[in-house]
Length: 140
Image (cartoon, rainbow, N blue to C red; front, side, top):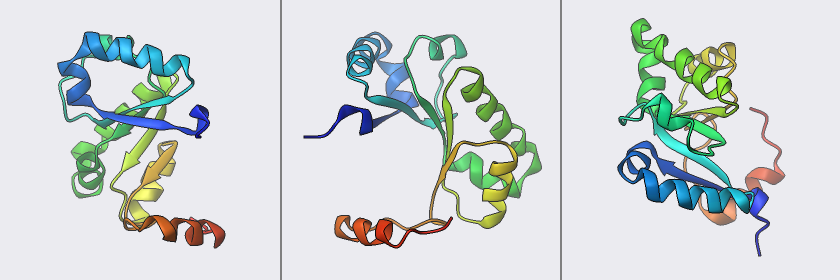
């Protein structure tokens, strides 16, 4: 049996926006069980900031397309800090996905992004290898 406080559920921005009334009810029920809720692919859908306030989210996961363009195109650099700012101003964590380079990680750290994930840290691995990875105490 899993303690619900250790469980995090991700749902894409587009699914949340397509089913707002049903999602609000489900999210409230999950939140009452102390399950953490994350909006995945933030920035790729059509969410309204006013709607964002009505969901009990713990984090916004910034889509990897924004992270990739962050170093390629300085115009997009402005979007990532804004997304991190939105998350933080609403009491949520900001998670950047698709981090592949040390430069991206350094930029995200300078923007006070709370968490990052991507191939820089690890490619997808089999379940049994997770235990070995954690036992090795990786230093990121």
